[in-house]
Length: 45
Image (tube, rainbow, N blue to C red; front, side, top):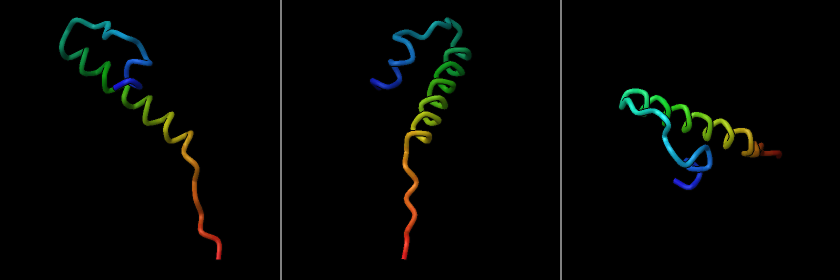
């Protein structure tokens, strides 16, 4: 939840459908940033 708030404290939309879309966009951005920061581990042997 703390990470979701890092993209902005409030949801700017008032329409419930747009609020849902805004949250989906924020979650997609968080997933993208997490994927960029995650190291890929390859087994060597």
